[in-house]
Figure (cartoon, rainbow, N blue to C red):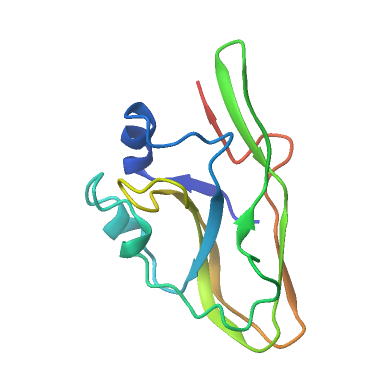
Length: 146
C-alpha cells in the first residue's frame, strides 16, 4: 500500500479537540482527483466536502467504507493509531480512483474532517467481483503523534 500522507489541517483539528480517534467512526473515501492541494489550502478546507468522491453504489455491504480502530494509545509519549485492514468488494464497476482518503465521520463542526490520504500512483477500477484490501499498517499504525 502507498504511504500515508497526513494533511495540514489534521494537526490543528487534533489540537482543537475535533478528533477522538479511539472512539470516533473513521471512514475512507475514494477519489480520482488529487485532493491534497484543496484540503491543505486551510484548516477549514480540510473536510470531506472538498473531495470529489466516486460512486459507491457498487460496493458490497451496508457500510463497507467504515474503518475499525484496533488500538488508539500512547506509550512513552508517542501516540499510535492502528486500524484493521478494510476489504472492499465490487458488485459492479467501482472507480476509477487513485486516492484513498481517511476521514472522521463523527464530528459535526467541522463535518467530516479529513485526516490524510493514500496515493496508489495510478487510477484503479474495481470490476464486478474484484476486491481491494486497504492495508493499514498494523505494526507502525496509520499514524503516530510524538
